[in-house]
Amino acid sequence: MVMATRMTTTTIMVTDGQILKLAQWLSPAYPVGAFAYSHGLEAAVAAGHVADAATLQAWLENILRNGAGHSDAIFLAAAHGAPDAAALAEIDAFARAFQPSAERLLESTAQGAAFAKVTGDVWADDLPVLTYPVALGRAARLHDLPLLLTARMYLHAFVSNLVSAGIRLIPVGQTDGQLVLTALTPVCEDVAQRATTETLDDLASTAFLADITSMKHETQDTRLFRT
Image (cartoon, rainbow, N blue to C red; front, top):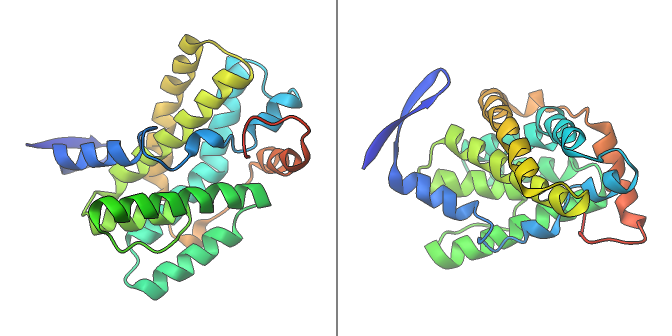
């Protein structure tokens, strides 16, 4: 079955199979270990920067618009359009260098390696070890999956994982967590729309407090998450 999916200003044809493949790749059941990472949120909660649903939503929106959400979507788009292996390797090297802390580098590389392995095992794809958004962008290109849909679903999965971490850390209730995720869904759409029209020259990050908490997490005494 083929359906027309509205993408803000663009209408593209997307098959059920494409949607379901992305849903599988970005599902919590896909073994990339995303549940083990909080992207510095654990340190932010410990410091009192995030204390309830409202501050969780604000924190995550800032990361989506001004931090790793935006930059990851740009790296994903660049990988999706990479013309050859050399270009892909250069994009991945840039993605590694762009990580602001050792833990954030671990988060991206460990998930990317896990994604490449399981995707290669299941679909026989030749995926090198790449950072997570670069690996996903390359896989999406290999499977002819639409870039904008891929970016939107990636960002939604990214923020869903952090909402889940927030539910466990703050804690906020399940209903409040879903309200936060619902409020952030159009942000994912907007950031993906913008990022997939940009290039590596447009990379920037001003989510400084999120970067600092990811550094502080490295020496935090009590930790539930790897980052």
